[in-house]
Figure 1: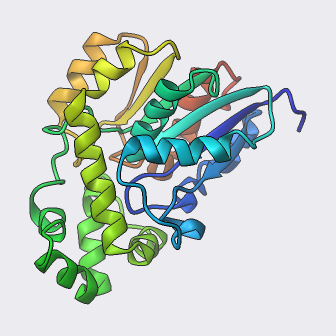
Figure 2: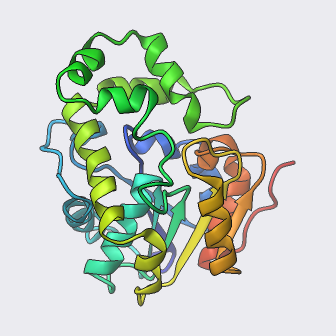
Length: 260
């Protein structure tokens, strides 16, 4: 690979790690792109580092890692919470990334369907949430992750492992940081104020992001949003070939034909 290739800085979502990109990586490479996963403090190999309390602090940490990547063209791709981090990177350092690509990122606080109810709402409670996190069996974590995929898609063990490795404080701080960031200004408002071009991808069977909000941004930003009908909240894992083709088109790379 030459240094003139487009480098994709891939940022995971809440409770995840770099492994969420494993299935899409071969298709991105086949499209002539250089995928480089970036793990946020508190997650994956960086899980012993203090977790930032704001999306802006996450963006600062990610920017340090992205600044060390090779390639003349850098595109930041973020899944869910990672898309908010990508947006904050473009806000604070527009020259760092040529473009950002957001995959199933929430658009407003209200659009976060699972953040304040059910198991995630319980986990965010200061006392009972910490206890529930500590004693939750693997089956309970797996059940909580079902909303991260289309209804018929099996929850991967690696996603359960990553969530188990995530601390309660990391999870709750990160979820609160998302609310704070979106509460100050919605994602569409932030994207409209950017100088950096942004593309969006949504799996249309998403159970975590409100569909009315997705429909609204599709109408507001025609030509910049790709819908993937057969995927839920995690198209880079559920439909990796299709998601890779969408990313390749967004960055102007020749996409490999998507598998049927």
